[in-house]
Image (cartoon, rainbow, N blue to C red; front, side, top):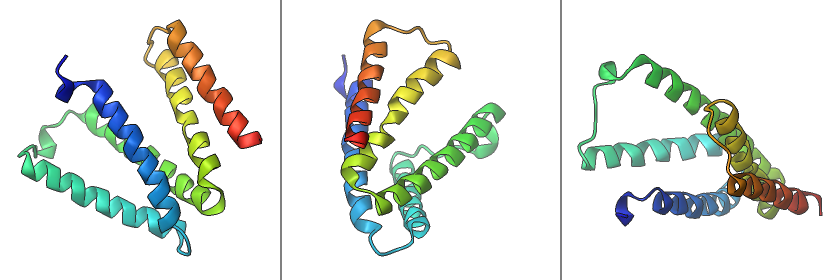
Length: 143
């Protein structure tokens, strides 16, 4: 398997950077409006992504993209924005040690959506892992 193209490498990178997001977000949202913090984060993400697209010469004409891609990417953007707004407010109000694990319930929710909406086939490892994520989040949140 080519490690540079491995989904696992990118998934681990995502987890690592999500952990840094929680830490830096908690430190950054202290004393400022959480919605403003989300806006600043969004502008930075836009600049970084534009830079990567430019460096890799991956820009494409928006008119050439299929309408369903536009629709689902716009919906994904709305969901991401709402998630970030909720996340930063939660970080502002609660401890990172409880907010981040509750946020990771999105993993279990994504598993359920994959099964129900996309028709993905469940495996025992996915079902057990999802249940363990839910159990771990509940233990952290409630105790």
